[in-house]
Picture 1 (cartoon, rainbow, N blue to C red):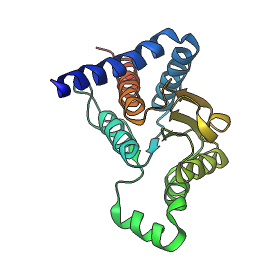
Picture 2: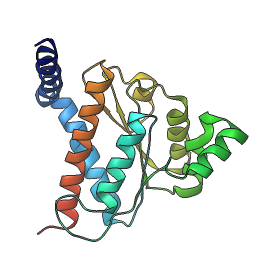
Picture 3: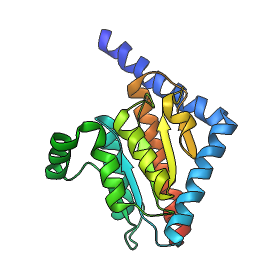
Length: 194
């Protein structure tokens, strides 16, 4: 019975965070802005890069897979890459340059003007994600940050801040993947209408 109550509580907390997103018109506008930027990116043959650490790296990889694979239906792949998927690169650069440089260096290698970088960090303060955002800005890329409530250091740095109204890491991450799915669905249906 004790676990049953906690299960109900967790589900209720998760639903409440999503309810707060739904009621925040400014946040909904920023999500819409991100969708429009990604649609424009793909209509102009651009590339989407994503990065994060831990669960946020998992979210980055999940979102990239939805674009390069498929979301709701079969269609041509869209160019998206999570920057942590090459373990040899990651360990070499981490060893030779330091962990804070792993994403910035890959952004410099793969990014170009008008591409998009989505940096995911529940705190908004992950040094390697912040350095990647700075590298992207130097290249003229568009930057989107997915964070928790405060936005952390990312809040004054990115072009579009999607700050989930929570300070609870699991609830933030659940909302990040929901928002990622929203972006994927709307981009897919806009680029490849049925």
